[in-house]
Image (cartoon, rainbow over all chains, first blue to last red; front, side, top):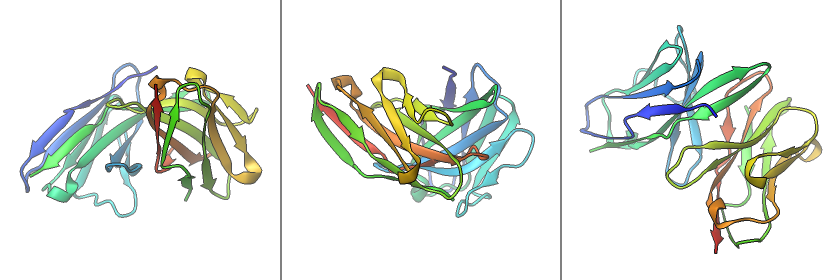
Length: 117
Length: 113
């Protein structure tokens, strides 16, 4: 299957700083990528849809000015957590959408563990 | 918007036992249905998906799921589990014309050797 990578896998930052997470589709082009947040023992919560060449669309309750998304190329989307606070500590997962002859599949990255101190 | 309910939070069974995980969704329109698995320390992987056609879907690793439209259900089954099936299992759904997935809360499956 297709491969999606995320970098970094873990990051620790101080409160008030910003951190950028990269999501790459390694062997296919993805015009659409998704960003999720996964809490311990909880399901994935969709944060936003990242669209190549256009603005991201955010789910209700997700602050777009806090979670900046850039999808500059067909293989890269970035999520920047701005002015991070301890409550932003979480596991962030991206997925990339592969379209194939009327069908599709989301391929998920391995996730990024963010800890804000 | 869609919502997904997984009935079992944690299932513990012995090797060779049969597994069935429940999944119900609520949505008024046509949906696509998915089961994903997350092995410890690994990323989510697709087990199987239903778009249309035969409501009994076979996936990887011996898993299958049955879509029962009248019950809004998409239960996952495996006749004989192995220790390596220990993982977190997620049911997900999206509306037919939308790629955004709504996930259930997940079921932790622990298989004892």
